[in-house]
Image (cartoon, rainbow, N blue to C red):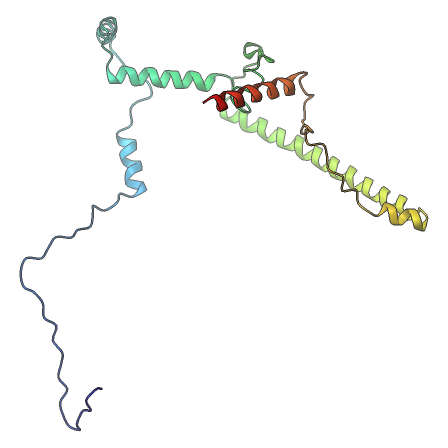
Length: 207
């Protein structure tokens, strides 16, 4: 057990021994760079979107390409141009390989192309939002009116029929029911999608 201290005895201060010598360097790694530093470095070292070449440099680049020598800057410029062309191409909606253009139901060349500025895009987005809001409010009012009429019709039924009418119908919808769309469905689209899905599943099993 602990020894009891006598009255009037001075307390002794404990000493912690330390080793003298060269202090070992910290084993921790370098400090992680912040996102702001990485963003600044990315902005300072970013390449220009359009590569400017003088006429002599263009001729020299053409001669180098004929010899099979392509500089990294020229290759990066071609890659940027390819990405720009991909952005201008029609946007694929749906699973790749099962969309309407890949299945041959819609010709990509017949899709109208629109060149809009940022202001035109915002204006059209606001107009489209107003149209959707008007449709939503009209649908909401129609559903409210239908519910009111249904409740009034159930209230006029006899007691035995009223009890049966208040029981909700929980019969499930068909499993292969296609989702509702704002545009009419394309004839034969769902059949081609199912056929493409079966072929994809068969290829996956062969692998």
